[in-house]
Picture: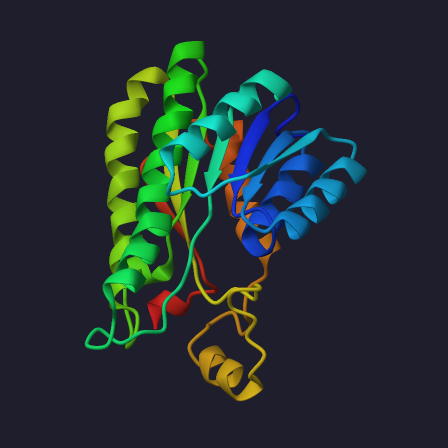
Amino acid sequence: MRLAGKIAVVTGAASGIGRGTALRFAEEGADVALADLNEASLEETSRQVRALGRRAIVQLTDVGDRAQVEKLMSRTVEELGGLDVLMANAGVGSGASFLDGTDEQYDRIMDTNMRGVYLCGQAAARIMVERGTPGSIINIASTYSEVTAPNSSVYSASKGGVRMLTKGMAVELGQHGIRVNCIGPGWIRTGMNPLTDEARVSRILNGVPLGRVGTPRDVAGAALFLASEDAAYVTGIIIFVDGGWILQ
């Protein structure tokens, strides 16, 4: 198994990409600390991880709050015995236009999508450096870190920030053996983006060379590669998991 003996933290693990990645990591031998704010769904992810024979802990966490993030990381080390992989996945979307957006909407997006990645990455990296762990940090950006669309200005800015933060982290943490990469999901069918409007899906697919929308497991496959020794000489990059949509 590619992550045998490894310990991973996955934020936004209650559903969608976070749950899919946590389960894929567990399938490959990792024990997983699961973080989210949806307690019931988080417990269900935990149940599924344990059904795969791996250990799991559940921690309700607002990733924009430093104290909660540090508690998540310290509890991971105390109860699971270490910290090898961080998947900073927690995020929120936005449907507001630039002209109509509010300060509250801006703060919510930036606190989760940008500050959350920063806080989680910093807390995890400090532990990895202290313990001498050559770890892997995976940040979730978006195809909207490269392009944008109406009603997505602030969301795109947050994901573009994640992409640049990833590069900076990779430069600074490489000396400690810590690899930092990010994933840019495209149209992935999740709870936040259920893609139930078939007319909309049809329009989307016109621009997807592979001819289908993605699944959380598609993203989890990329995360597994970046978390594993198969990516031992890979840092500072973004992998777009979008079926080629960004090419159109």
